[in-house]
Length: 192
Image (tube, rainbow, N blue to C red; front, side, top):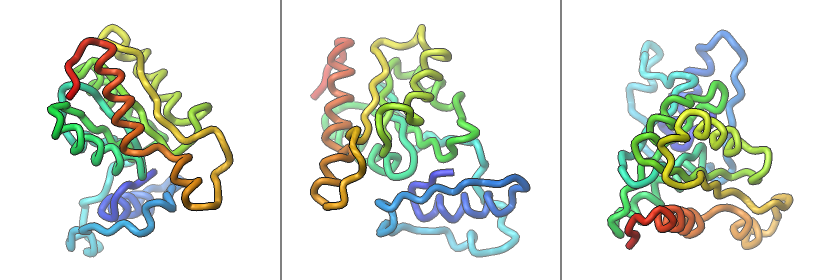
């Protein structure tokens, strides 16, 4: 499981504790200073409002392109969608939340609706979750695609220690926005 907000972390941790099987809970260091609301009812032991392991979420509806991310990239994807909305580009954001099992149906259905997809992740481009997502889209929504699936990922280097170099190595709102605009332009969709 890979949460992107404090509320998700709370909900997912409850799901992990309640699950009879082992659950790997991934925390992204880039989210440690994140602040956000956690509903008060999450604090109640009898609360049934817990995440479902293996279920992705469409966190923002859109019609032009699907943007898929997890953990910190789900948060960045929302920022990208908000920025591009100002340019009249409608981005649907899918937050994977669970990496295994992977909710392929949610993102495949989204791509069928929009006809295009960009995947963003804080991982290397090669051998990452993004490659599995791209393969799943190719298998489940190929006939609906208007453009090849694009992936935006970390530079293929060991994570730098110096903060400016780390920032340069990671995907940014700008690099993801550029990938979305290039994808939409390639299929003749107007971009702002």
